[in-house]
Length: 365
Image 1 (cartoon, helix red, strand yellow):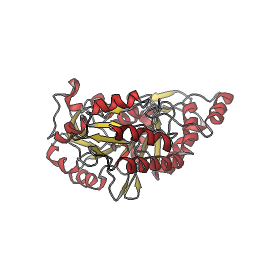
Image 2 (cartoon, helix red, strand yellow; image 1 turned 180 degrees about the vertical axis):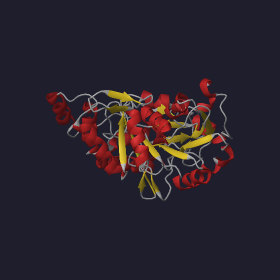
Image 3 (cartoon, rainbow, N blue to C red; image 1 turned 90 degrees about the horizontal axis):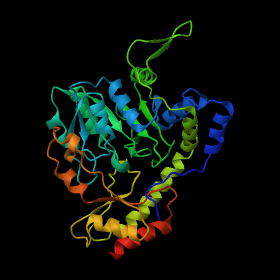
């Protein structure tokens, strides 16, 4: 079986984790936690980074840090993994769904303003499958209406928008290090920001709002959260981050190979990349159009029969029971691509022969 997306371990993971075990620094305090935060901020060219237990925790922490709460509204894509939408509800706010662009599948910035009300507190763009959103327009809208922008960059580590790394453009950016992401800590996440006050607030909230008094006692002025990553996972993150540029290079080579082999296949739409962006293609994804001989699900089954794992696109969240009554605009594009999309194998360890086999099966259909 050619897997969809599995982690790559080719650096100092064992060495750094063994160091944690040998020194007993395995909990949420330790040198690797600080190193991972500092190294990640440096890579993103961001002023601060705060580790979390997972990407969902980073998103919830971001919302709480900027003060999103009961009764507020947050504009977000419906075409996304459900985490960012769930975190909006975790803090008592309400998601308002906006449609996506037909070519890039990311939030359609031209449909945002019509959804803004007096209750709108933030915009939460998702760089879906590694393709950056048009952040200039979103930041302009946010400044016009005095809104916060929280980037869900959990799938777009290494992607570039007009010379800036995704996640480091809005007020806050959030990342995931789940086992299928570009770099992994098994479970883990990161919040980044260029605002020192937001960074201080995020770290305070993520560590149980703990103040250590002169006599060593813990004092808490408000409710806090235990979102911190253990040192042993941060050690793994440090090792993975050392290889991130190599992994990005491989991802781009893979997407080029896929594009070259599939661009002329009738009924298959390949990913779009704008001139001023670099789509890192965390999951290389295609649309199966009506003029392809098989349906999307039939193609998934055909790939499976040939030992190739694939996955349908995320289902539109505005059509799911917990969110079916939430506000939204015209969702025609989201509804359309939701039944057409397939994620193809995208592991770093994938090779050209694997990609040729995958594309050969698609062409033979």
